[in-house]
Image 1 (tube, rainbow, N blue to C red):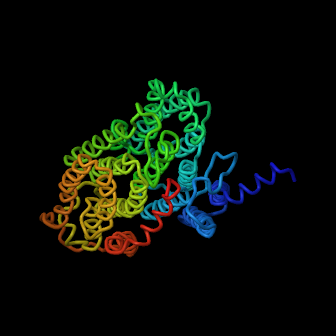
Image 2 (cartoon, rainbow, N blue to C red):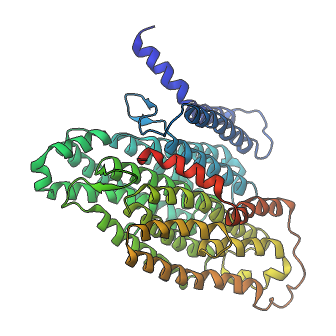
Image 3 (cartoon, rainbow, N blue to C red):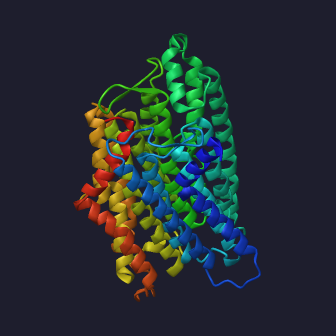
Length: 511
């Protein structure tokens, strides 16, 4: 066997989590078109098995990386011509994506609007999106980042409009596709400009080119334009201002499990690729855990700090007036993109660690909130705050779980969301960005207004006449709420293991 073939086999062995997702997708396609009678949700359970098996091999990769000894390095393992990195940073995010995929499947089990006839298509699209998320966070080149982003986006367009008989779902798919196509085109043009300037699509090669070209650093106008155009694509994926306009309508019209998936998975992947691009291409390691922009005139942290403030402010203020729970959570998701951007602009490993920690807690908080939306529609037939009136006395456990998720999203102690925001603000204050920290705290106070409206409706408003009897809560919901709320409560009082994991995974960005 030639050296090239041997290298390919070795890369595929290390690429097993992604290969398993591909094989599971193919198996779902084959079984979906066979005439053999399938039990209800059989393909969904097969998808669970594929995600779990991928997670087992991903855990093996993580153990191998830890046993290799020493500090995590940004060049731990490079696959397929150095286009994909297998390092603790990528493994951490991939673990989050598998968790997101599994939780999306769990929400889908009880989602009544999901047509069983389209279950195969649904699972295939979900698996393809998850594979795209894997490629995004492992990318070491702009080309791989773009391919991963498109592999996430295109199935997401279809999933957003999966309820074909719903006008809102069709509208969501159309808007998502239009915004996605525009953002993708702008980003691709920006990448072509940067390729022309640096002569490479590799993140490390771009940094070396910028460090060596004094004339480019002296006149960085074209470089600034390309950076802003690339940021348009990444900003669309994380739904930050001004690339957020699609978010409320898409979240409202998409099936609720897919809304939960879109609010966490692509957002986390967007931050993963943003960190790789801005730190490994446009910044240089200045010692310790700190970074500085390569080009003095290209102060991208200032641009992102302005976007951070605008994103959290617009998201929180717009959420105050919402009556639909899904639209409220959409604007909440926008606001949280603003909080997470604070971790990017501090230019330190502590900021990156804070992002990784907060995203792990955010998975449970957000999915807990969307599970309540599924529960509310299932038992009450509503997705509005009005449908929550007096529900706390008819179904206390789900409402208490929802209150815990909302208060954790606000950042109140002793919940996991408080610890996550604490580390974010600590990183900002450590870089003496006091104005940004103050605005972040003020926005958190504003968020309490609309989160508390939901809690008030559940526990402090009168029960509608004739609806005072207790609601029978299926065991599925009780178990699911318990699984999602337990980590939020635990991470509010004991968070050392997650801190250790997040710090190790962020160590590829410097000691």
